[in-house]
Image (tube, rainbow, N blue to C red; front, side, top):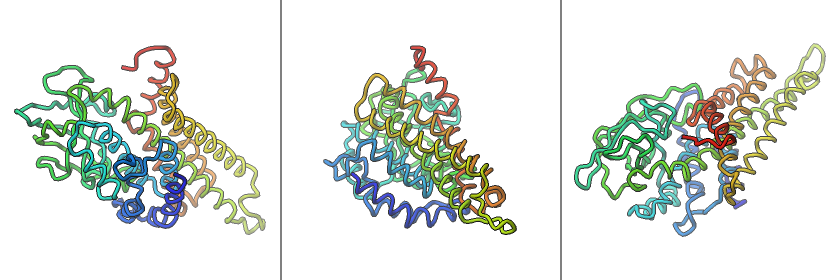
Length: 378
């Protein structure tokens, strides 16, 4: 397992970090970085060994996502959404293409992603407003999906929609939709503030035909799969990415303070106590969140009564810390950061994504409060 982390560190250093600024500046798909992850076997990181994958536990996946995010957060987002989709497919034992798709992932030949959030219910991803219509053995899917990472690039999409004939908000079903399915349309460009290379664009499903055999959960059972499979993995990976972004901003700030000088005083910026204090705050925040996220990963591997609470806390805590750290980085590096001469400006923008990404930080704070008060989350 350490080999996978070491591979991620090397790929991040040699490829992701090399192209990150260009990917961000041009808002383009990180083709070089994605290709490197595929060729190095990391696309099969969380695929069970029986299907040719590495079978890495949450702690290793978390470390890999954190490492990737230090080099290129957009690539890390693509990777983590692939991991989440893979987890859904892996759990779908009745899905006839499961073995084939998982083996293709392990070979680096298949990229998947989630298509949950909808325009009508916004960040409440667990409550799709679209609804499948049954025509014999075919389910027709019509939906306006938003924030689909790897939109137009993925080989398959895990799509959620309200189950046929139900009016319940959480009675939904997951479907496997291949990229070439007629009616699957990229409906807009991605021009986000941050994560500019992850193609997180809206997609429209116009009467997409999904065979009954492409259901990944039982009718109306999607909500349970979201809570027990998707939510923990997404929360952990998102938190890991936030820690990676914050760590990158901290490292860049340290380098700037050591390498830039006040020539008229013959001193480096590191000689200024207020700047050293900010750097210290940044490092403390990074270390604190890294340790907590590692704890959450271990709790996922050995679940207990407090596991879900820790999972909910992980994304909220790491996202807030990344905002704090990257804000301090911008203020500490001053004009060099503001004028985009340093990577901290990209880190600053990338860090904002986790705060608005469903479940948003506000929603997570509400969930955590409800959990502490023994109230139902929904």
